[in-house]
Length: 423
Ligand code: EPZ
Image 1: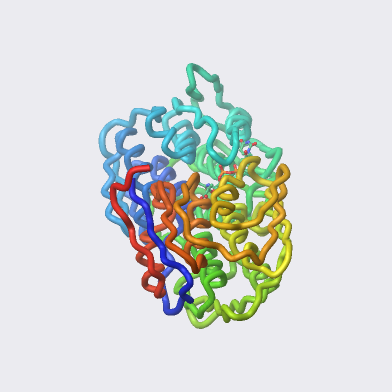
Image 2: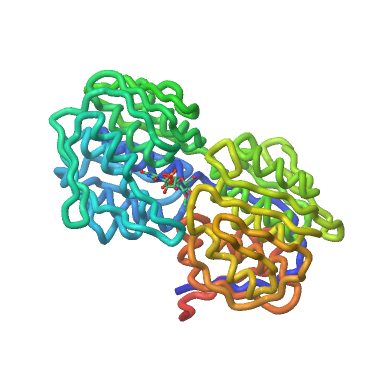
């Protein structure tokens, strides 16, 4: 297992390019199951989750050539509509093959994802929606077994906005007979992006990106050729890294329009954030104190839960106390004990963390627990002016960040990957 070693205390400067969005690529790769033709995905980041999805599509019988930034998915052999536990346990988002397989082949057997580090994360809304479209669903020995001659359009009202739930139903409805209306949908930019691709394939999707989406199902869908949007969470992570370490960076291809909530909180803390051509510029004079800012995570366009851990590190540097409330996942403070090992003062009470900023962070060996927690530990390492930080188990990081240590080094950070480090 690799680790990343960081010598902190250096401001960041220079320019990096933001990669394609992981959380857009995953559902779009699943959407390739809706057509028999050969689809081409461009601007795909080189990530472990992309490799896992490619392996799943191959297991299902597709011919996949994945060489980031290009992924080509062809018909391959007969599809076996079954997603095994071995693959689904590596990545919960695999549940998004359920809708396309059921819609395309009338049956699907997909392992239940089970819980994860950040929460129980049930898929009841996915199943409720597919049942409303006419599927019969039963759970058997850890698997979702779904059948339906042909899905038919219907109205589905989600109990809460769910990103992959909305995406699973959009894909299912794209081949259903008639019109589907999804209400209380997730409004994330990645949902909107999937809507664009389904329209390219011949479905008629309207309202993606709003809380009500209408889908006119088609009898058949075409393959597509599509370049995916940039990763707003990767961009947000580097914006916070620059704010924490201090410096002046340019983030090429960063989707500022999808990061308004994050940018607003950074400005409130005293960080300069602005657009400069096709870049976002982030500047902070490390000598100038940061102001404490309260944050409550929420579905888009609110403050993204996927930025909570990174922003918490920034608040460890602020002159005063800030309150961070996590409303999406019940167990998303796994980074707190590790940050405390670096000298942070954070009190957690249920969904609320009180961050008492101002205490200097020092280098330590810390353990990554999930994708965004690992990014927060890397940022803490950039800030720690005393001693070296080593972040263990960076396989979590590799799930969602393309070459993070190289990109940071490009900005002048002292970051190296140590391969095959035990622990
Ligand atoms: C997506 O997960 C993202 N993953 C997550 O990013 C992100 O944290 C999350 O949305 C919230 O923004 C992908 O897009 C692949 P949800 P998803 O369904 O779809 C509850 C990262 O770091 N819920 O919107 O699984 C659920 O438990 C990852 O890149 C139900 O109760 O999240 C949670 O509390 C981590 N029943 C809330 O809804 C359901 O059927 C929102 O979850 C579905 C969800």
